[in-house]
Image 1 (tube, rainbow, N blue to C red):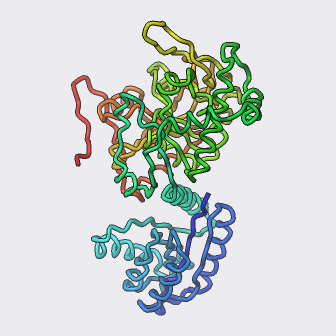
Image 2 (image 1 turned 180 degrees about the horizontal axis):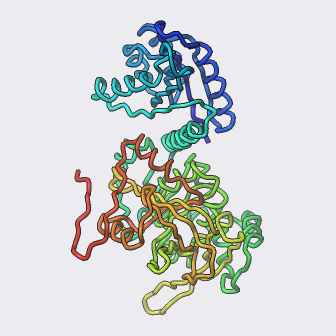
Image 3 (image 1 turned 90 degrees about the horizontal axis):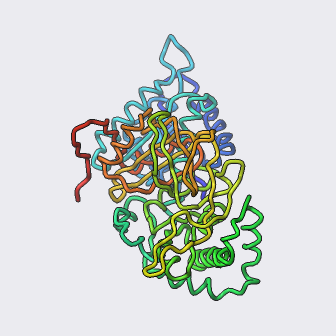
Length: 480
């Protein structure tokens, strides 16, 4: 994963008597320590910026270093023209004020007033440039500063890595799943992602068929070793899944893709006599983000979550609700991940919903990777309206013996919408009234703040809660 590049510049003023050089050096030293802890690259430009000319020199250094984020350290009240020059680096902007070293007598730095003015210059005087910024206050060693800055580092790191990604759609969107439709032009404009959508299902099928058993034996062994149980009906479909798994890994590596949206249903059933669920689950667990049913924006959500989390991510359906304990069941066919499973237990089984084939009744298809999600925090993000809006939902998977359907699944409680508690009835009403797609990318951990910050940097609106009413309601939608 690419590291975020953070540059810091030193805005000063000759009329304030505080120890400006010492203040900046202490902040730069603390930021250097944070760079090691948080995993970003750091470049400090200590030269004082007093004039517009000074700022232009520092701005060129920031551009030459190709910084992703410029922290304007308002060591003292800055020159407004200098602030404007620093806005022309192409980097996202942070405004940092430090506490005054004294509480009486001559004002030492006037630092906070400095970021107040700087923010107003950006928001008002430079409003036509639409430059987002985030403000910071305090010592870099303080808890509040560190938490606030860590959220920014994680959010911008995810944005940076997504923007340099190449993804592919293999076989198109699953037949009839038209709520997953997308506009690749907006996808690139908002996220910077390059999409390659003309790959056919046959490319994967032909690869899978071409391998010898010896080529996939290690993969078969991996499936078997990681499974807590294998249903006897899985049979020969396990080798076919190993072939599919290898085909997708080889395909991804040959083309240099970072993620795949796979038309897994119904083509694997009709053309290969199996389901690919276990292979897709293992891809997400071991290799890279692989979205079910050709869901491109599901894949984008999965990739954002993978950049934020140490856990894999999956695409799930909302398949049941329980108002008694205020929880929802997140489920899918069987894309279980050992890293996300309770006690690390994944078992290989036939699909719980056999497909109908004309004239032959129901046919058992295998294998799926069943699992219950482990207890703990989890985050959901869904990009909607071609990147113009975002769903941010988080909660906690329950640790109980509550019944659930066969597949990969878990009951999510302690529900939060945009960081605020929400009841199941309001959640369901919001999803229905706002017309949300039926896929919900999920990972383990609470990343609501990071996801909402990503939305803010990218000028994506958060989907508002729509409280439940008995009368018919209409949701807000972007048009055009």
